[in-house]
Image 1 (cartoon, rainbow, N blue to C red):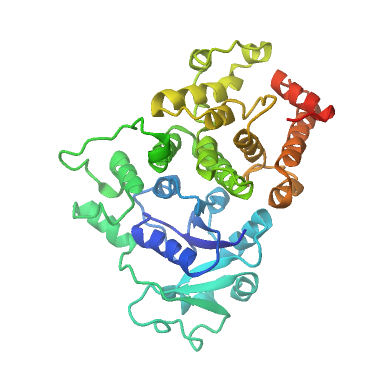
Image 2: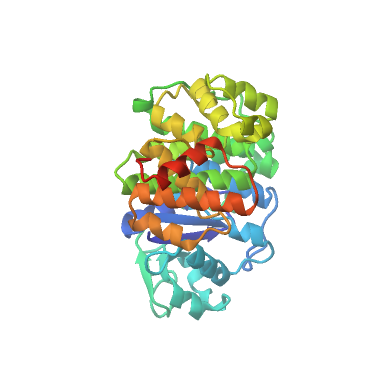
Length: 408
């Protein structure tokens, strides 16, 4: 895939940030923009009012349901000062992009680019995209070659004259600010009282998910589910869920399947992870199935079954492909539908999973679905055996089917 990178403090994310990412996707042939929130920028001191995790959560809430955008929290994990060259090399190593990744740079920073850490190496490893942030015509305000002597592309984008510091100031003064940021970020700012916010606007009520028709309102359902998942999971678990959703989307498109179904199953597959054992058993019991010895021994394995029941009850999802994909993403079962196979694969090899053989991620680009599925199942079984961990009945049956060369 072809990636572009947009870094920043996103303190908070505003519509100008997302409009810029959208403009890059429209102007150039990138498949996805990676948004990288900085822990601390070496160019400026990060203003207070929101923690690094708050900023990342606002960003995640703002792109719910949009598979063209993703977040990488490598700089938050790294902590300390964030240097672009380190992040660039990290992303290239993990994502293995097709060609050089694009690096989006505002013309307000172009004139000081030479002061960055290893600017020549950054220019060598990436395709720099200089976007308009300052007033004037394209080519002015630091974008001309005489001002920016590095190879680059120019983005003739419209200037959205908004800055995060202005948003913070408006929030603290209780001025009009709510439509300068995406709605997901606004709800977090209001809910957590960030930047000195003092409460919800008068008369505003919270919204509850609607049991809408899957066919007509899938995008709305996905956004509702994603925001619920983001608010209920630890952020690292949410990042795993969203990256599972993104890889499911990518694989579904490659295998001519419904990408929205794959995305929804991927984002929801771990939604019941935080629940206690009794609640997991109560929900899982509602699917009509019995409990295996392994499930009784380790009720945490029921989180997939419980999530399928919860997705049906809370959002009215009745689609068998989606529910089966969620139900069996951990244990597996014979004769899984293609969406379920995709989510099983994505859950095991998504980009934030540690210790994944890069060969599996390469397989996703050119391999048959059943061949790839069989390889991932076999690798999972080998891993469980190496750790002397129990193997579910469903996984054993899958492995037996593969060994007998029967249809999975």
